[in-house]
Image (tube, rainbow, N blue to C red; front, side):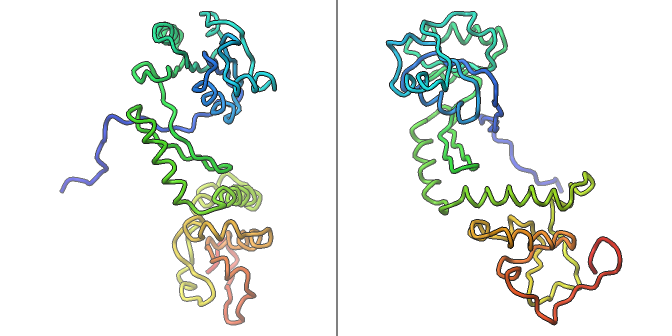
Length: 267
């Protein structure tokens, strides 16, 4: 019997969370499309240089220049602009000039995105939903940008409110967990945090499901979690179990006990 593995679906893109903090991003153009590109890379903490004559600047781009959010070269593109670039984004109404920039980028091995010309793109910009630390990108691989926007809006409507806040709480919980179990040898257990002793599986107070915290708790639980709840939850890391939120807020039942055998685990 042959093994069952996921089918390969060619023709897609490798979706990544590209870390460009403090990287130099060159934006050629200053119109509406450029404004969107600039905001995207500023949100990723990149260092941005815009090359565009002042008369062609979109009001938003002009504002970001006036606020010192980006550097500005008040002229058309020149080949030397690529010298310190880690990424290039072009958004100009000149197909021939765009293609020349793309060819120069290929020579210098600088990743580039040429607006509205998918064959001349090393990567695409998708339609992004943002809520604090949460980012969800929808890509149609250059086939239908407007459709990507529609899909993104549908996804956003289906998500619960305060989802970004819930994820922020998860991040804080992870940081506190590293304080409770800082050693590298604890890494696998921190990642899993799901084991539970069989002897306690019938405990009426706590649900001992074999799942991680994120699987056991709802998004609403994380939004509602306070500092005391977080500390109480972390006290269960040693046994490797995940009690529901309502149970860690209740006083332990007198019939519930843990027998400690002197080792790290509970039995």
